[in-house]
Amino acid sequence: MAFAKISLVFLLCLFLAFHSETVKSQNCGCAPNLCCSQFGYCGTDDAYCGAGCRSGPCRGSGSSAGGGSVGGILTQGFFNNIINQADGGCAGKRFYTRDSFVNAANTFPNFANSVTRREIATMFAHFTHETGHFCYIEEINGASRNYCQSNNRQYPCQPGKGYFGRGPIQLSWNYNYGACGQSLGLDLLRQPELVGSNPTVAFRTALWFWMNSVRPVLSQGFGATIRAINGMECNGGNSGAVNARIRYYRDYCGQLGVDPGPNLGC
Image 1 (cartoon, rainbow, N blue to C red):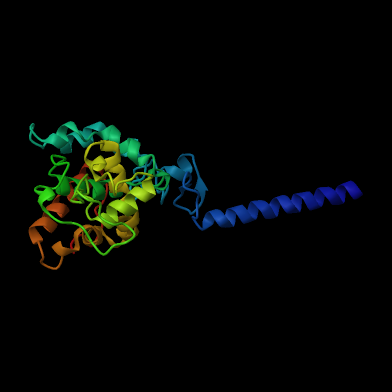
Image 2: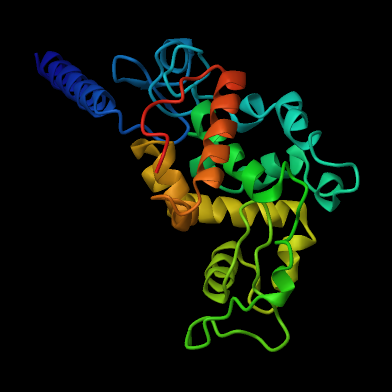
Protein backbone atom coordinates (compact mmCIF):
# COMPACT_ATOMS: atom_id res chain seq x y z
CA MET A 1 0.00 0.00 0.00
CA ALA A 2 2.83 2.42 0.89
CA PHE A 3 4.54 1.60 -2.43
CA ALA A 4 1.31 2.30 -4.31
CA LYS A 5 0.99 5.70 -2.63
CA ILE A 6 4.60 6.59 -3.48
CA SER A 7 4.04 5.55 -7.09
CA LEU A 8 0.89 7.66 -7.30
CA VAL A 9 2.70 10.70 -5.92
CA PHE A 10 5.56 10.15 -8.37
CA LEU A 11 3.17 9.92 -11.33
CA LEU A 12 1.34 13.05 -10.20
CA CYS A 13 4.63 14.97 -9.95
CA LEU A 14 5.64 13.73 -13.36
CA PHE A 15 2.34 14.85 -14.85
CA LEU A 16 2.61 18.30 -13.27
CA ALA A 17 6.18 18.71 -14.53
CA PHE A 18 5.11 17.73 -18.04
CA HIS A 19 2.11 20.01 -17.88
CA SER A 20 4.26 22.89 -16.66
CA GLU A 21 6.75 22.39 -19.50
CA THR A 22 3.91 22.18 -22.03
CA VAL A 23 2.39 25.44 -20.81
CA LYS A 24 5.81 27.08 -20.95
CA SER A 25 6.30 25.80 -24.49
CA GLN A 26 2.92 27.08 -25.59
CA ASN A 27 4.08 30.58 -24.71
CA CYS A 28 6.75 30.27 -27.42
CA GLY A 29 9.42 31.42 -24.99
CA CYS A 30 11.78 28.88 -26.50
CA ALA A 31 15.49 28.69 -25.83
CA PRO A 32 17.58 30.15 -28.69
CA ASN A 33 18.42 26.68 -30.04
CA LEU A 34 14.76 25.59 -30.19
CA CYS A 35 12.12 26.30 -32.81
CA CYS A 36 8.64 27.58 -32.02
CA SER A 37 6.17 25.51 -34.04
CA GLN A 38 3.07 26.84 -35.76
CA PHE A 39 1.06 25.54 -32.78
CA GLY A 40 3.25 27.27 -30.18
CA TYR A 41 5.45 24.43 -28.97
CA CYS A 42 9.25 24.28 -28.64
CA GLY A 43 11.36 21.58 -30.25
CA THR A 44 14.06 20.73 -32.76
CA ASP A 45 12.64 18.29 -35.34
CA ASP A 46 10.66 19.03 -38.50
CA ALA A 47 7.37 19.23 -36.61
CA TYR A 48 8.75 22.34 -34.89
CA CYS A 49 11.38 23.74 -37.31
CA GLY A 50 9.61 22.86 -40.54
CA ALA A 51 6.54 24.36 -42.20
CA GLY A 52 4.86 27.02 -40.10
CA CYS A 53 7.83 27.55 -37.78
CA ARG A 54 7.41 30.91 -36.03
CA SER A 55 10.88 31.58 -34.66
CA GLY A 56 14.24 30.04 -33.86
CA PRO A 57 16.43 28.03 -36.27
CA CYS A 58 13.53 27.28 -38.63
CA ARG A 59 14.19 25.07 -41.64
CA GLY A 60 10.90 24.99 -43.48
CA SER A 61 9.74 27.22 -46.30
CA GLY A 62 6.32 27.67 -44.72
CA SER A 63 7.43 30.23 -42.16
CA SER A 64 6.40 33.77 -43.07
CA ALA A 65 9.84 35.03 -42.09
CA GLY A 66 11.66 31.98 -43.44
CA GLY A 67 13.95 30.78 -40.66
CA GLY A 68 17.08 28.66 -40.86
CA SER A 69 20.76 28.60 -40.00
CA VAL A 70 22.98 31.51 -41.06
CA GLY A 71 25.05 29.33 -43.37
CA GLY A 72 21.95 27.68 -44.80
CA ILE A 73 20.27 31.00 -45.66
CA LEU A 74 23.33 32.94 -46.79
CA THR A 75 24.58 30.66 -49.53
CA GLN A 76 27.74 31.37 -51.49
CA GLY A 77 25.58 31.93 -54.56
CA PHE A 78 23.47 34.60 -52.84
CA PHE A 79 26.59 36.39 -51.61
CA ASN A 80 28.27 36.16 -55.02
CA ASN A 81 25.21 37.66 -56.73
CA ILE A 82 25.82 40.80 -54.68
CA ILE A 83 29.60 41.17 -54.61
CA ASN A 84 30.00 40.23 -58.28
CA GLN A 85 28.20 43.48 -59.16
CA ALA A 86 31.11 45.44 -57.68
CA ASP A 87 33.83 46.61 -60.05
CA GLY A 88 36.91 44.39 -60.25
CA GLY A 89 39.08 47.18 -58.86
CA CYS A 90 37.06 47.55 -55.65
CA ALA A 91 39.04 46.97 -52.47
CA GLY A 92 36.00 45.37 -50.84
CA LYS A 93 35.84 42.69 -53.49
CA ARG A 94 39.10 41.26 -52.13
CA PHE A 95 38.06 41.86 -48.52
CA TYR A 96 34.51 40.76 -47.80
CA THR A 97 33.65 37.06 -47.98
CA ARG A 98 30.61 34.97 -47.23
CA ASP A 99 32.62 32.90 -44.74
CA SER A 100 33.79 35.97 -42.83
CA PHE A 101 30.14 36.96 -42.32
CA VAL A 102 29.16 33.48 -41.16
CA ASN A 103 32.13 33.37 -38.77
CA ALA A 104 31.18 36.78 -37.39
CA ALA A 105 27.51 35.80 -37.06
CA ASN A 106 28.42 32.71 -35.08
CA THR A 107 29.97 34.94 -32.39
CA PHE A 108 26.44 36.29 -31.81
CA PRO A 109 24.49 33.13 -30.78
CA ASN A 110 21.25 35.06 -30.28
CA PHE A 111 21.44 36.13 -33.90
CA ALA A 112 22.79 32.91 -35.40
CA ASN A 113 20.17 30.75 -33.69
CA SER A 114 17.14 32.83 -34.59
CA VAL A 115 17.91 34.58 -37.89
CA THR A 116 15.31 34.41 -40.66
CA ARG A 117 15.51 34.79 -44.41
CA ARG A 118 13.63 38.08 -44.16
CA GLU A 119 16.21 39.41 -41.70
CA ILE A 120 19.07 38.36 -43.98
CA ALA A 121 17.31 40.11 -46.89
CA THR A 122 16.94 43.22 -44.73
CA MET A 123 20.52 43.18 -43.51
CA PHE A 124 22.11 42.59 -46.90
CA ALA A 125 19.94 45.23 -48.55
CA HIS A 126 21.52 47.74 -46.17
CA PHE A 127 24.99 46.26 -46.58
CA THR A 128 24.62 46.55 -50.36
CA HIS A 129 23.58 50.19 -50.18
CA GLU A 130 26.19 51.20 -47.59
CA THR A 131 29.12 49.56 -49.42
CA GLY A 132 28.11 49.68 -53.10
CA HIS A 133 27.71 45.89 -53.43
CA PHE A 134 30.66 45.35 -51.06
CA CYS A 135 32.91 47.61 -53.10
CA TYR A 136 33.91 49.94 -50.25
CA ILE A 137 35.56 49.04 -46.97
CA GLU A 138 35.71 52.64 -45.80
CA GLU A 139 33.54 55.69 -46.32
CA ILE A 140 34.48 57.68 -49.43
CA ASN A 141 36.59 60.67 -48.31
CA GLY A 142 35.89 59.62 -44.75
CA ALA A 143 39.37 60.47 -43.51
CA SER A 144 38.68 64.14 -44.27
CA ARG A 145 35.61 64.22 -42.01
CA ASN A 146 35.49 64.79 -38.28
CA TYR A 147 33.38 62.21 -36.48
CA CYS A 148 34.66 63.06 -33.03
CA GLN A 149 32.24 63.95 -30.25
CA SER A 150 34.85 65.84 -28.27
CA ASN A 151 32.82 66.16 -25.06
CA ASN A 152 32.38 62.39 -24.73
CA ARG A 153 34.45 61.45 -21.68
CA GLN A 154 33.55 57.77 -21.69
CA TYR A 155 34.91 57.21 -25.18
CA PRO A 156 37.33 60.11 -25.82
CA CYS A 157 38.79 60.51 -29.28
CA GLN A 158 42.39 59.36 -29.53
CA PRO A 159 45.02 61.62 -31.14
CA GLY A 160 45.53 60.92 -34.81
CA LYS A 161 42.64 58.46 -35.06
CA GLY A 162 39.69 58.79 -37.41
CA TYR A 163 36.24 57.48 -36.57
CA PHE A 164 34.75 57.69 -40.05
CA GLY A 165 32.56 55.01 -41.59
CA ARG A 166 34.10 51.56 -41.87
CA GLY A 167 32.71 48.11 -42.54
CA PRO A 168 29.48 46.87 -44.11
CA ILE A 169 27.28 49.20 -42.10
CA GLN A 170 29.79 52.08 -41.98
CA LEU A 171 30.41 52.26 -38.23
CA SER A 172 31.02 55.93 -37.37
CA TRP A 173 31.76 58.24 -34.41
CA ASN A 174 34.04 57.66 -31.44
CA TYR A 175 31.20 56.70 -29.10
CA ASN A 176 30.16 53.88 -31.44
CA TYR A 177 33.72 52.65 -31.92
CA GLY A 178 34.25 52.76 -28.16
CA ALA A 179 31.03 50.97 -27.17
CA CYS A 180 31.34 48.43 -29.97
CA GLY A 181 34.95 47.64 -29.13
CA GLN A 182 34.10 47.27 -25.47
CA SER A 183 31.35 44.79 -26.34
CA LEU A 184 33.53 42.78 -28.73
CA GLY A 185 36.62 42.78 -26.54
CA LEU A 186 38.59 44.94 -28.98
CA ASP A 187 40.20 48.33 -28.43
CA LEU A 188 38.54 50.00 -31.40
CA LEU A 189 38.84 53.41 -29.79
CA ARG A 190 42.64 53.24 -30.08
CA GLN A 191 42.63 51.00 -33.15
CA PRO A 192 39.63 51.96 -35.30
CA GLU A 193 41.56 50.78 -38.36
CA LEU A 194 40.95 47.17 -37.27
CA VAL A 195 37.46 47.46 -38.74
CA GLY A 196 38.91 48.11 -42.17
CA SER A 197 41.67 45.52 -42.02
CA ASN A 198 39.92 42.35 -40.83
CA PRO A 199 36.70 41.24 -42.60
CA THR A 200 35.41 39.20 -39.65
CA VAL A 201 35.90 42.18 -37.34
CA ALA A 202 34.14 44.38 -39.89
CA PHE A 203 31.11 42.10 -39.96
CA ARG A 204 31.17 41.76 -36.17
CA THR A 205 30.92 45.55 -35.80
CA ALA A 206 27.99 45.55 -38.21
CA LEU A 207 26.29 42.79 -36.22
CA TRP A 208 26.90 44.68 -32.98
CA PHE A 209 25.15 47.74 -34.41
CA TRP A 210 22.42 45.54 -35.87
CA MET A 211 21.64 43.75 -32.64
CA ASN A 212 21.58 46.97 -30.61
CA SER A 213 19.93 49.43 -32.98
CA VAL A 214 18.23 47.64 -35.86
CA ARG A 215 16.95 44.25 -34.78
CA PRO A 216 14.71 45.75 -32.07
CA VAL A 217 12.63 47.47 -34.79
CA LEU A 218 12.52 44.63 -37.35
CA SER A 219 8.90 43.82 -36.51
CA GLN A 220 7.89 47.35 -37.56
CA GLY A 221 8.83 46.73 -41.18
CA PHE A 222 11.76 47.51 -43.46
CA GLY A 223 11.15 51.26 -43.26
CA ALA A 224 11.88 51.25 -39.54
CA THR A 225 15.28 49.67 -40.21
CA ILE A 226 16.12 52.47 -42.65
CA ARG A 227 15.32 54.99 -39.96
CA ALA A 228 17.46 53.10 -37.43
CA ILE A 229 20.48 53.13 -39.76
CA ASN A 230 20.16 56.56 -41.35
CA GLY A 231 17.07 58.44 -40.30
CA MET A 232 18.18 61.53 -42.24
CA GLU A 233 17.15 59.74 -45.43
CA CYS A 234 13.53 59.50 -44.23
CA ASN A 235 10.66 61.98 -44.64
CA GLY A 236 12.01 63.19 -47.97
CA GLY A 237 15.57 63.63 -46.75
CA ASN A 238 16.96 61.38 -49.48
CA SER A 239 14.19 59.54 -51.30
CA GLY A 240 16.66 58.14 -53.84
CA ALA A 241 18.59 56.33 -51.11
CA VAL A 242 15.40 55.06 -49.49
CA ASN A 243 14.11 53.73 -52.80
CA ALA A 244 17.44 52.05 -53.51
CA ARG A 245 17.38 50.27 -50.16
CA ILE A 246 13.80 49.12 -50.77
CA ARG A 247 14.71 47.91 -54.25
CA TYR A 248 17.57 45.78 -52.90
CA TYR A 249 15.34 44.47 -50.13
CA ARG A 250 12.58 43.40 -52.52
CA ASP A 251 15.15 41.74 -54.77
CA TYR A 252 16.72 39.75 -51.92
CA CYS A 253 13.34 38.75 -50.50
CA GLY A 254 12.54 37.37 -53.95
CA GLN A 255 15.82 35.48 -54.12
CA LEU A 256 15.26 34.00 -50.66
CA GLY A 257 11.59 33.22 -51.27
CA VAL A 258 10.09 35.33 -48.50
CA ASP A 259 7.37 37.98 -48.44
CA PRO A 260 8.76 41.51 -47.91
CA GLY A 261 5.94 42.36 -45.51
CA PRO A 262 4.37 45.83 -44.97
CA ASN A 263 5.76 49.29 -44.15
CA LEU A 264 8.69 49.34 -46.54
CA GLY A 265 9.23 53.10 -46.68
CA CYS A 266 10.08 55.65 -44.02
